[in-house]
Length: 318
Image (cartoon, helix red, strand yellow):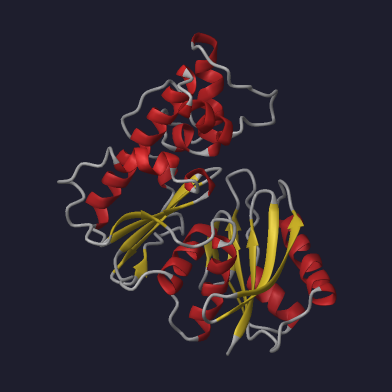
């Protein structure tokens, strides 16, 4: 059975692992990352791969390819990492650089689009028309229509976190708009809204000094106990997410909507969100609106593996 090396670069960590065609993670190792620009992040990837090969090695067979999931805009055809965000934009030919360094074919993609490929490959039986929404530190989606991920003219499709969803709390986003769903229902959003609303609400929530963020798990725990602020934060976020799902359903007509990410992993806010879905709006979502069955901590790694395997078989979702 073929295997590949998978790399998932997130905001705080780089995961490297060897994955087989069935989606089994044979071995893996974590490396701390932190906030880096593309040059520093590329150097971290190279150094960490060197360490992984030296200290962890390969299970049974050597990998046939390397797949990398990256935050930001990615050109998967050209193998270019275009941008992390507007303030960190240094187009980097990462695929060719890694191929030259390690002697294996290398395939890269955006992290959420990579995760969608893992969902399609390892989880869904019908994967021609679905939406994958990731709710974590931020919010983004991959919309698959007729077997192809919608990428857009600048590889920027799916940034649905910057969508207004009819929940007004008074937050302004760095994108220049107000009331973006990411500023209400993501890890960043819960922190922002908690700071905004806490001076005028009754709460037991501990709000740390910035740049530390409020722990969303604390918000959920206090919400369950009836804490006024935390109940409001959860209600706002679940309504915002429900509206986001329904808006996207109207746009792409998916058979299934799959949600993942750390904010949803315990199911608490997911249950509240699904209760707000209008049955008429989601009546054609025959596969349901559901949480991914993939391990939340490993979805990105599996996504990077799926990117490599799909490309090796010339079945990449474009």
